[in-house]
Length: 174
Image (tube, rainbow, N blue to C red; front, top):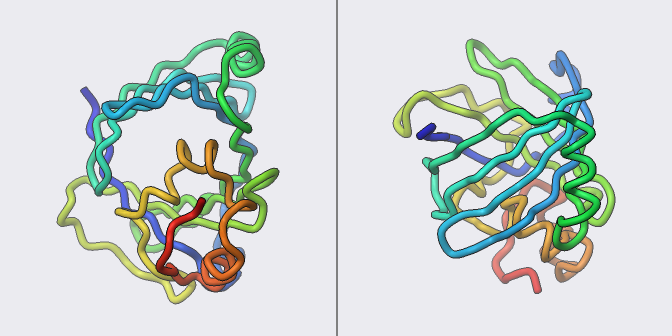
């Protein structure tokens, strides 16, 4: 088992763009979401992945991920993915010895920008650049599996506006 430890933040300014070192387009879809796990297929940079990720919210979750041929991943997405696909541009933004992944969502989640950082332990210290907004690690509304079934475009206007400013608003997305 691989344990993924990550923190997730909204982004409050475009200043991260000046530091971005790489970018790639990702497309992913969900085959199943249960109370225990989500099962996802992803394509990016000519490759495909099959992933099973633990469903518990928080900083650390079990994750299994396996490479598969891109053509097969695309076929599976087309035939079996539930809900709209998650489309995003992922930017790698080095900050000190760490690297943030800043995801600019497209399609039904267009406008949403989220930064994630993977850590070696839940207690690991990391830099917090000024462009980071509110932390949403524990807020499942910002998990990709939920953005697939409850896209950002359908959230209440006040919640969307707050997220675009890098602020977490109270209230659920319906």
